[in-house]
Image (tube, rainbow, N blue to C red; front, top):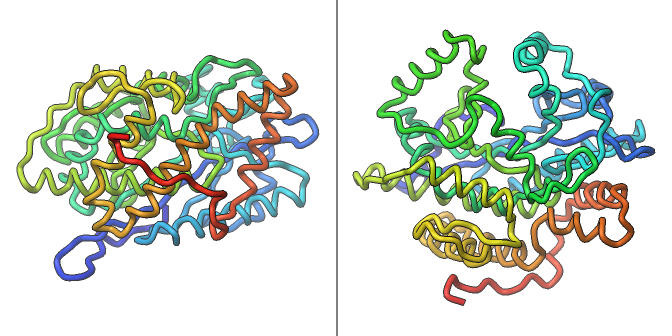
Length: 391
């Protein structure tokens, strides 16, 4: 995400949290519908400040600016997608925003020619070669490093529902995995992945990172791959658990909910409210979200018991109503939540596309079309009215 100078203050003493997004995209051969290691053809023609190479040569990352208004974030994301897709069109490639690619020749894909990535390949071998996955990363502005460390840990129980909203990776290497987000299982194999532990200060957190670097298990601070973490390069808390989302509306929904969660937890820390986070329970809830998406049951972050995913999502949204109203996001976010639940997860839409003719090429075409259809300024097709958690 673009550099953030610090927390922006508006209307008296209230802190307004800006949010930005990093999106990762698969590059697809339109003839074969498979991943292709040709991201360099796109990156050489795109602005360096907005687009970057990733570990795999089949992946491109875009970086939005930080925004207060979610509508402005949405338009920026659509503009970035438009630039990328137009450039891909000139060389007959496709752009696909999803956690995994349904079709890939794993043996033919290579890491990007950059010393850091080449070292990762040497150190991690098959784990690196199989990182054919894409995520959505949301940054929420928190300028105090100690506060960012505390908030990152305290938010862990609320992340599995956000994963479920993004779930878009049911297929892996040509097979239905049975999971809504198989990407999250692939990602969890990294030694530093998962929920972040509790640290009493940013200094203690940095000591942990330095200890891991000294151990040789990781080579730099950027390899802290927690589900949520204090960013190493901008003053934010960074959400990393989510799959890439074909529909920008789902990114905006997740960004709005994440900002509200951060705002609520920042205030709780300042008020001295204690929060017990049991990492084993968080890991279990994360697995359940990866398995179920929006179509099964999620673990309720409050009660710790399984409930239908729509109930958990509605309770999450309703519980954040004070923060969403404070930021002016209630109407937009609650409407997007209702639309997401009515439409179902990307994983389920992909399975429906496959079921029609039994062709994974149809799944790829669906993802290509949804990624391209960035129609933020057009009203949604009769979005359902939001219903409270009690409904």
